[in-house]
Length: 522
Image: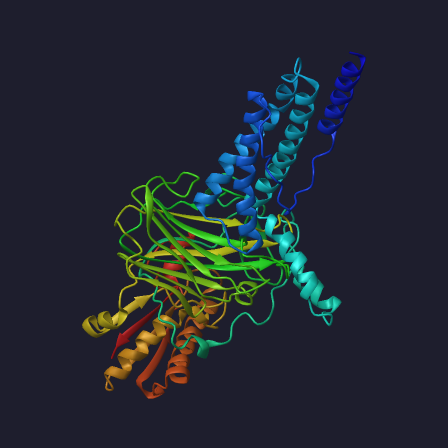
């Protein structure tokens, strides 16, 4: 009898010590499920439920180790599992109290299985949180890189790859972006993106305060406007996290439209893995979710550890559509060098470009028309405060029509899709899609001559704007001559400054419409 009491006391002390132990670190070594049951229903249920959840999380941890990113369904499964695991963990002390009155051997067996299940549960909770925050993959990537990294990597290289933009609460930070932002206009000579001609939304954040979320956007997280001393304009910082969205105030999209924006990044570590992505959603709701019944999800990889694919996924009528694609890409350098993203939706067809390269061109991506009316941005898999992503110059426009037909039919076109550096006549390379179409018209009709007219908004002095508009017209002519070999004798130029506005110069949208180039047949 004394021996039995003493054994119970030992078992109970052992149990308390195990439950009081710190949480175990996440591990990849498989924890084996107990082969037999104890015969105490609360214990057997606790062990079974814990290992069922453990097996589920362990599977997704394996995906992360293999560099496979999680999709929306995976994230939903993990979130639900995390809720179940937390509730199960909270109930563990009650399970232990159910051992009172049981035989010594049964208590011993039950205690060992409970603590084994607790170990699996602790691993599952910690790992699920890391997976949902996009942090799990960094550990495995880092370990792999430690084994394979070239010994000749210099300290300067490490500093360059881990530099930080700076504090978003300050009014100005001193970070600069690399000088090789683009490869020149010639690299864009075959770029066939043409922006829509009817502006629906434009925001360069020029009228928002530093540190604030822009007035024409909404979010369920945070984010703020940042200004840099060596990079033009204001930028909106996107904050990483699962189910965190920033949504511009757009509530109606036509059947044909284009989306453009610029991206800036900083601090992208060498071991940044496949989960680090910028997501663009086209959705049927302005809720902070992918969508109610319909959505399209595109993702651009920012991982630096290896080449990672661009992805495209569609979801219509509350079920996965026919598209769940990974499209071959290597954007490691592009995402570090201020890329321009262009998207064109033409009824069912969707195309996506990063700089001049087209990575997505899916003819039946939009399975149901007139249901996707909202645009959402989301980033995932980045270390908060270290690996940072910013966007600027979001432009949404209806159309994307073939300007060649319009010029031939009407003898003139006006476009605000030819973009220039601020206060400069330097053409931004992504504008070459329009200039290319103009060149094709001139090649088709060898007798055609065009007058190119530049217009500006009202910012700055009248004389300066007049000169700037003339310089911009000349720059377009030079691009036609230099890149597409059009004879300069067929082109004349003119500038009208701010004298002929087509919209209100007090708003960002209006200014964007007023900054335009006209082509008139002579």
